[in-house]
Amino acid sequence: MVRARLSSKGQLTIPVEIRERYGLATGDEVEFVLEEKGAYLLPLKRRSLLDLYGALPATRPWPGIQRARRIAGTKRGQELDRKLRRR
Image (cartoon, rainbow, N blue to C red):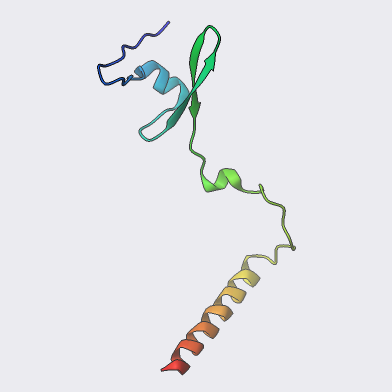
């Protein structure tokens, strides 16, 4: 069992054993889950964008990286042309 003491400001330091076990770092959040006989902490991990890959259904087939780069380059070129013509 690991213990921690509540400060006079109501702050609680999570012991190093707990932080290491659950991979908690500065800025991570924990949720207090309340039950009849007490409460417990649930670590809430931050997710990276890579964790969200595939979360949304594709609306059209992927054209491939080369085609996507050509499309992006064409659109950037068109936008630059529009900006230059306005001058």
